Length: 487
Image 1 (cartoon, rainbow, N blue to C red):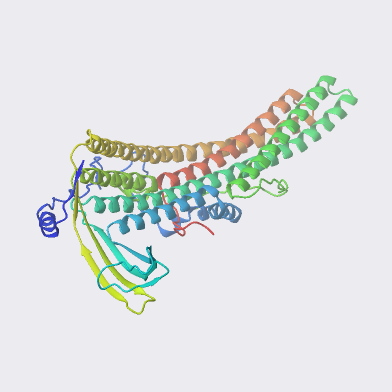
Image 2: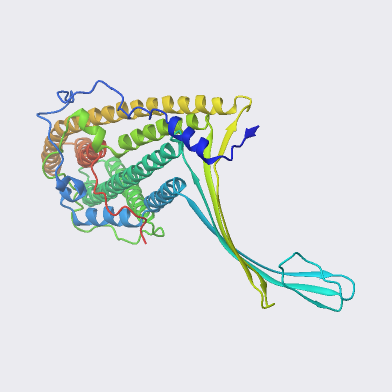
C-alpha cells in the first residue's frame, strides 16, 4: 500500500526535516596487529619491498624464465577475465552514480483530428479552426514536443550508499585482478622451475647412462677374460636398463611442463623444444627476499585488500537496505509545447509546464524490508570474518615461506656436500674395481649413491627456487600492469 502527496511545498519541507544521520565512517577491524610486530621466522629487521621486487622474477637472472612469466601475464586467460570484471565494476559504478542524478526524457507527438457527421454540419469547440467537406470535418493536424524530468531526492542516503558500495566493489575487482596477476606469475615461475628440474634430471640420468654403458663394456671384458663372474654383467645390464627408464620418464616430465607453460600463456599446447644439450641450470634468486612487518600485509597483499573492500561494500549495502525502510521522495516535472490547427491557417499554440512531488511510503510489506536489513547485516558480519581469515592465512603463508626458505637453504648445503663426496667415492670405486681391488657390488653401490645424491641436489635447487617464489607470493608484491583488459 502506498500513499502519494502531490503538494510540492509540504514534501520539500518534509525532505528538509527528515535528514538522517549518515552512517558512521568505516573502521578497519582491530586484528591485534601493531607496527612493532615482526614475523617469528624473520631472519632480521623488517624490510620493505623495492621497485625491483615488483618484477621479482627478473631477480632470478634467467632471461628464459623472465620471458615465460611475462608471456603468461600478457596472455593468461584468467588474468584477462579478471580485467574484464574490472571493466564491469567500472560500468556498475557509473550506473550507481547516474542513479543519484535527474532523469531527463523527451517526447514528440503528432495527430490529425477527423470527425464524421451530417452534410454541412460543423462540430468543434468555440475558437477552433476547421473545414467541412462532404460531412467530414477536419480540425487540422496537432503537433507537440516536450521534456520530462524526474529526480530522486535520496532522503535517507540509500543511493549514496549504493554508490559507495559500487566504488568499493570496483576497488575489490582491481585488487582481485592484481591477485590473479600474482598467482599467474607464481604459477608460471614454478612451472618454469619444474621444466628446468626435469631437464636437469634428464641430463644427470643421461650422464649416468653413459657411465653405465662404460661400466657394461668394462664388466664384459672382465667376464670374457674370467676376472669377473657372469652375474656381474647381468647386474650391470639390468642397472643400465633401469637408468634408461628413469631418463625417459624425466624427458616426459620435461615435455609435460613445457605444455603447461604454453597453456598458461594462453597458447595452444606445444612441446617442441628439444632437451638441452648444455647445462640446464636451475635459476637461483639473486639477493634476499624482503620481509616486511605483519601489519604491512594489509596493504601489500591484493587478496587481503580485496577482502577489506568486500567488507566496506557489505557495510554500505546495510545502508542501502536501511534506506529502503523509509519513504522515497520523487520530483517529477513536464514541459510540453503543442500546436493545433496545422494546415488550416489558424494555428493555436500552447505551453504547459508542471512540477510535482511524490512521496512513496510502503505501509505493510509483511516484514520483507526488515528481513533485507537483517540479511545485509549478516553479510557484513560474514565479510568481517572472511577478512579476518584472509589476514590470518596471509600471516601463516609468510611464516611458512620463511621457515621453508631457511630449512631448504641449510639442507641444500648438505646436499651439495653429499653429492661431491659421492662423486669422489664413485671414482675411487671404479679405479679399485679396474685393478681388481673391489667387487662389482661396491661399484654398483657407489654408482647408485652418486645418482641418488645428484638427483637430490637437483631437486633441492628446485625446491630452493620454489621457496623463493612462494616468499614473494606470500608477501604479495607484483607489478600492477595496466588496469584494463588486454586487447
